[in-house]
Length: 339
Image (cartoon, rainbow, N blue to C red):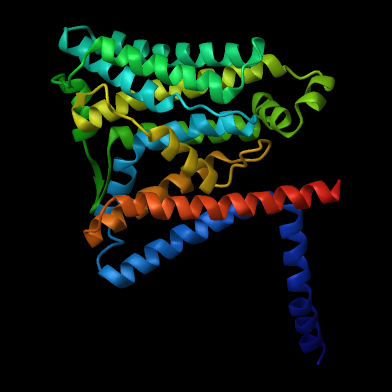
């Protein structure tokens, strides 16, 4: 009798405990929603196609979206501070074509790789300085970076440049396999970037400052935090991620092309928002952005399996984005009411 009573109490207490947890962790709700959508997509695709969730398809999901994953990490840093970076697609193209051009000219990859990352970081630095010290809106500053990087990409080359260097191609062609599962060096690089990004955001003073700046910049200044340095550095990190992503995409496609990455900045922003990062700043998780990228990649794969037009990918992502923006708005309104 007593055990039945105790069980009854536990069952009665579960909804209130769940409500309390969700109330305290309401910022995690979009991320939980993204995980749920990702799982439902996989289950639904498996039931429909019968052979969707296979080791080869899941391995290809990381392989095909490695560059997007790297861009999403940098974008998460920027959006959590309340900013935006529209230049990442153009930086991707610039660094990719620059990498291919230098390699075709016989320059050592040991020089080319750090140079491409530094070029991306330099464009990020320009944007960060404009935002912080010239009080330019992030949208405008990064739009200038978008045109600057795209223009420079066309200056480097107007046509596709093929990569012949075996070291760079190895990044994509090498397979570390366990059974039917495999991972490429580009996939390992992407996962390492995610892990480092998540660690920095969660476990370092710099990461905590990013959240503080995004939550309330004025309060962060009063607390004596390095607001200016933090706001510049997040754009430098985003630019460096753009440079690294350009290298990964060049290895993936085997060529650099100045028109690569057109519209990619919007895909990255969509993936980061779907992963639970609030556009208003102050809340967001690198691991959530990774889930957002996987949701995006899974939708693209499902559309390809169905043989439908890729336009449906845009339509579905647009609808998901609308849904998540509404969820974010509800969270912001509830937070304001608590204050």
